[in-house]
Length: 86
Image (cartoon, rainbow, N blue to C red; front, side, top):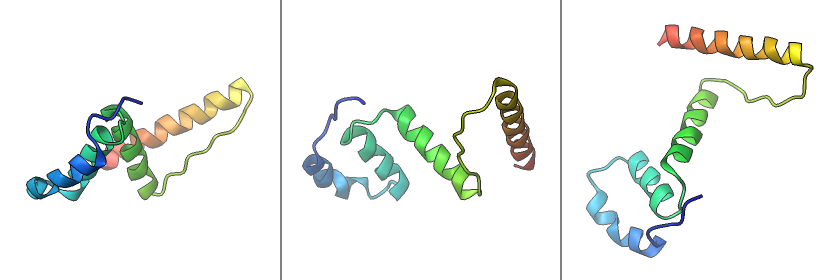
């Protein structure tokens, strides 16, 4: 995690100047500047949240290699189907 570049107090003082931004944009900005998260980390977490909203579930299990490959193929097919539906 990167080092924060702004204190929470300084960010709060800046809030009135951010009224033209969406709440989501302000939240992302806070995560990066105040909490010190990287832009890619914030994007990854938000993308995962969108998938969960679609009813997807994260599953972590240990499998034999051949079964793990089958699961990876299933995931790729599901993502391709999702992309076609967009």
